[in-house]
Each structure stands twice: as C-alpha cells, then as structure tokens.
Amino acid sequence: MISEALILDGARVAADMKEKLGDKVSRLAEQGVIPCLATILVGGDPASATYVKMKGNACKRLGIQSIRIDLPEHTSTEELLAAIRELNLDPKVHGILLQHPVPHHINERAAFDAIAIEKDVDGVTTLGFARTAFGFADFPACTPAAIVAILDYYNIPIEGKHAVVIGRSPILGKPVSQMLLNRNATVTTCHSKTTNLADLVRLGDIVVAAVGKAKFVQADWIKPGAVVLDAGYNEGNVGDVDYEACLENVSAITPVPAGVGPVTIATLLKHTVEAAEKAVSV
Figure 1 (spheres, one colour):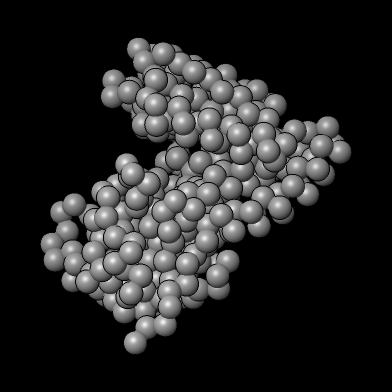
Figure 2 (cartoon, rainbow, N blue to C red):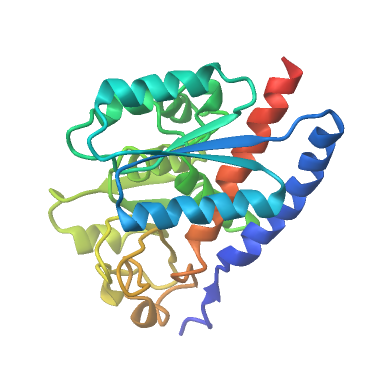
C-alpha cells in the first residue's frame, strides 16, 4: 500500500526562487543595473499573447524590466532576424525570449540561433542545447530546468534512478533527458514512434510527461511509488497525466496548474537576473 502522494507544489518552489532573486535584483540596482528581458511575439496567437503577458507581469513584480516587441503575422524570417540582432547589440537588454511557436513561414530554428548565447535565457539555441548536453550550460531550457529544480527542492533523488521522458521536443523532452542523464539517472526517452509505450513508462522511477495531450498518461502506466512530473498544459487546465487516477500509484506528483508552470517562469526570471550579473562582471 502506497502512502499518500506528496504534491509537488510548484507555486511554493517558484516563490522561494523569487525571494532569493529579489536580493540579487536589489544589489544590481545599487550598481545602476536593471535586469531586462525582451520578449518577441510574432503574430496574434491568443495563447502566446497570454503567456507573454504573464511573463511581463512576473518581471514587473520582481523589479525586472520587460520589453515587449510585437511583430505582425506576415513578418519574414529576415525581418525577425534583424529584430533579434538589434536586441543582441543593446547592452541594456540581458535576455531575449522568442515566443514559441512562430508562424509557419518563418524559419524558427534560424531565429532561435540568432539569439546571442549570453542572452539565450530560454535555452533555445543550438549552442545552448549542446552546452546543456555536456552539462555546463549557463541557461538550460527553462521547463527542463524547472523540472530538475522541483526534484531538488523536495530532495527527490535522481542519481541511480530510471527516468522515463515522454516527448522529445528540442526545448523540453530532449534537454530534460540530457539534464537527468548528467545527474546520473538512467534515461529512456519515448516519443510518437515508440512501441510498447505503457510498458516502458512502467519502468520509470521518475516519469516526465511532455507530449501536449490531455490526460495521455494513464494510472496503470505508472510504477507504484514513481515520481511524476507533468509538463503539459492543455485546454481545460489539465496536464498530460490523468492526475486524479495517478494519485493512487505515485509517491509524488506535480499538479496542473501550479506545478511545473510557475517554476518555469521563475527559472526564466532567474536566468535573466543571472545574465545581468554576468554582463556587469565582464
């Protein structure tokens, strides 16, 4: 019989992170420096606009300057690259976030890779991913970093555990697999072409769900006592895991909302402040 599941409260983790950041922002202010995050939104996708607004509000509450750049739907790749280059050259801008996804006609990878590595606070560049894989990235992708931060906050062991990651996106599934591997977990990365998915998930001591499908992960897929981190957010405020059903099996689980999401935003703020600190020290 499994004892009552530990709810991994992302709001609590995020609040702790922001409290520590407040001191850093104050010290930078004493030096005449205000950390600044520039966010680029291409097109009028309502969900993306909401995310950008949330990030801007989070910056404001912490004393971080937020610059929002809205570009029209018909913006070309070259026009987007030009906007990114301008931000790269602005010494007052410490972090650059290109809201994903961009319109289909834009070369998203080229746009991501145009962001200067020292301002890639969302961990989206090819170079940033490579550094994450080798274990020395300054700013790994924010959601993977948030997942690891939650595990660390609750002192959940990673080393020696079998982690199963469901999803292989370049800004979530792949980097979190690398980060867990670098922490000495044995990692299985599953994806849309994986056969016997449920059987593989049942092997996981740690399960990361990052597929973008509501309640995709079922309770009978979960090994008794496993730790589940749900990085999904779908219509109706539900994650990728059937939360209520899985509660009976897991030892710990993140809710949706108030799980991985708040820590992802806190991580973005943390990276922006750290980028400002690095700029000052150069």
